[in-house]
Image 1 (cartoon, one colour):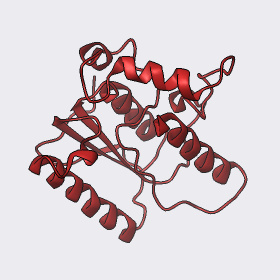
Image 2 (cartoon, rainbow, N blue to C red):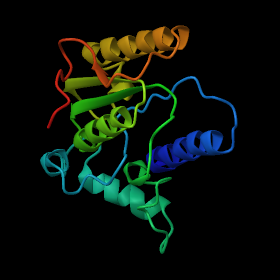
Image 3 (cartoon, rainbow, N blue to C red):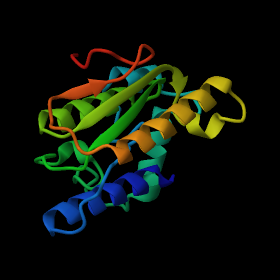
Amino acid sequence: MAAIKAIAAANKVTNDALAEGGPKLALQMPLYPEAKMPFETRAGIENISGGYVDTAGVLQFVWSLVPQGVDYSQPYITPMNAPSHAGLPKAILVTCGFDMLRDVGHAYAQKLAADGNDITYVHYPELPHGFIQMTSHSRRCLEATQEMARLLGEALRKPRRPATGLHSLGHRRRESVAD
């Protein structure tokens, strides 16, 4: 249930820091981000029910966390709706194949890149939403989590690179960002 609150808080912190001349954040790392409600996407339909977390669960999260009458389309809750994503911290954005948020995460990565941000997009087609919580049960989930930790360490050590579009990594990940 904390997913929407965490994303809303991260977006608010990032946007407020940018707007108010606050501290320059070194990096953001959205993992299977809920950048928009996934109800009309292919991934949302494919994962409508039965998964670890599914599309029906997203709706329950929204009902539980966003007070009645609050516009959930505001950018702090639905970051895809922000008028601009320019000037955000460099990002490592991670999506999974078995995830109702796969398509909205991919679209968000494209939007960040289109607005000139330094972004690395990582896609694990064989893994489910929440895989970092499954490391004691799955060697592949552990390997992917360790890989993300390495990417995080490398990104924090490297200076921001000039924005040249979306950088996809590795053979296990989506190579093309075109729809």
